[in-house]
Length: 345
Image 1 (spheres, rainbow, N blue to C red):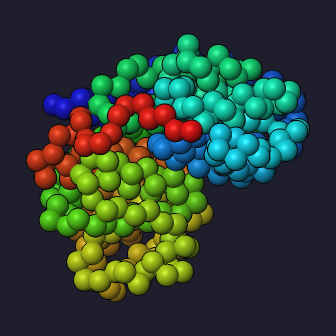
Image 2: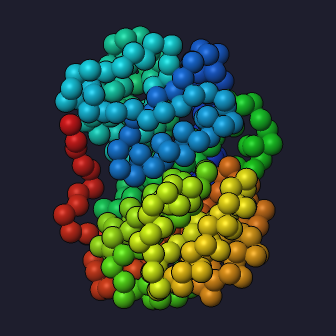
């Protein structure tokens, strides 16, 4: 078994560990941050962590009701023209905690007296040391270059932060079931392998999602690019209609990530539209109608709420990248041109 597959399989156990060891800290921290009454939240991240930040943007904006956006790190490192961030909360997200430009955003905020939080997998990292507050996801060392367990650990930390902010015990009870749902998703590995074999002769692919799962489309496409060297593009279903749909033709591989939530009806419409073009359609969903729409469907847990679905829907995407790479006889643990820690300025 490759390191990457092993780390995918570790995730339910690590999610349980994070809940057991960090939930009380994160909930207490969230309550403390809430009392500071930030007018907005600014998220700084790169790469896979940027996709985790996209999840945070949706949760913080929709559930916490706080305007949330993504920082532009080059404004701090290249242009030396950072925006006015007074009265905000700045959150840096990085697996290693060593992302230089993300650190620059935190450093600037700290100098300006702005509240800062770091979410990392290294509690002794520069980001964790720089930020006023920190969350340690405790996923352990990743031996594979491509991130898997650290990404979903970040998503889980963001979900816990949201539940703690809202002081909502129902949300915490739902979070408690994430390890169980993760096991159910990983049990779909055989179905994912069949989908990968169907796609393996293509060097292009589209991943569609919407709403909370927009981050899953981007993370799935990123992993497929990194490991299988496929030109995989991620789109919101809404944006896809505004031009990119024109590139579809018969047998074009399309993955639709569509768990049950408020975006489901629009995703059903999108899937009907692309099916009419004769594409090869893979569906990741827990909606029976959508699962029946594809010969290669990946079933997600039925009881999973929409706001937590990205943590679980990510797992089939990770497995798809793994199986596409293996179908092409590629080195999954050491993709060409990549390093575990990428420093950008």
